[in-house]
Image (cartoon, rainbow over all chains, first blue to last red):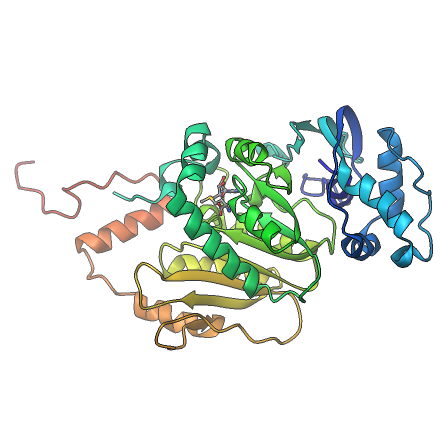
Length: 124
Length: 275
Ligand SMILES: C[S@@+](CC[C@H](N)C(=O)[O-])C[C@H]1O[C@@H](n2cnc3c(N)ncnc32)[C@H](O)[C@@H]1O
């Protein structure tokens, strides 16, 4: 699971959960790999991100690097900055661990990089 | 006897490791999936020359995802079969993968995706695989949560294999209830082999449905309104108490989750008077 995906994932499908965001991360294995950099895509995705969630997620798994805690103004034209965001969003992956629902504490295991969001019948 | 996979077993059991591998090695299958996926992406009408974030629903082993990558878009895929996702991992398809059931809803925050595609998966949602499954409810949950995770003016395009006109009606009714409008585009409607159904769902603005592909240019776009008439035509298709009528009725009851005796060569035949 990339942090881009984490930034979009919620547990709101759980019965009784209203927002279900952001999910906590307990990372047991992390993989960092190289992904082609597309500055246009990163610049376009930034407004859709919850920046505080991205920063906290990266920090909680020890990969925040030089990412600033608040989003900078001129991000669209700042190539260096976009590269840092690219790295955190797409190159850092949680391979094994858990996601935690902030409201119910329900764990969603991550195996082989795939979060298991399947619910039991009594949770829908 | 029906040969539709969705009648044989629930998807997470049908697409086991053997099937997942078989599926992804069949080159004829790959060609067909690729072609349908290209068409689905085309129907999304995305602004050109930019990379978009797409959702692939029922992404399976990532055949459709590889096509999304060809178009240089990023994607997140969701599927209920861990075996299919396992093959996707091996193939390094480039999208991020999630194990999930579409009928339980799309677990994403509002406005996430620039578009969604789904190739050969939607018909699975029309079945009740568990006692607790209620297809209209699951379809509604799916469409309403999909609606919210799409960005404004984004579209969702589904290539699917409807079993009959009732199933199309079931699907479009729930999609409309969830806030979408749109309709079914039928490509090559006069060819048994090439005929393909695409459900095109739109979130906003009064855009017209794209034209279907056809050899002789007959219009084959079926907007919601006229489907009722189609249904009427379809109804009474079979003579009451005929074998086909009985089979259809049994199928309907099966879909409602009722207990129905199996079809056999004796179905619809007169019993001899021995009892
Ligand atoms: C025929 S395969 C298509 C896979 C891929 N889209 C492609 O074009 O190759 C259908 C897929 O739908 C998935 N599926 C069926 N029901 C589902 C559900 N309720 N939720 C998520 N995925 C489902 C199956 O697991 C399977 O991988």
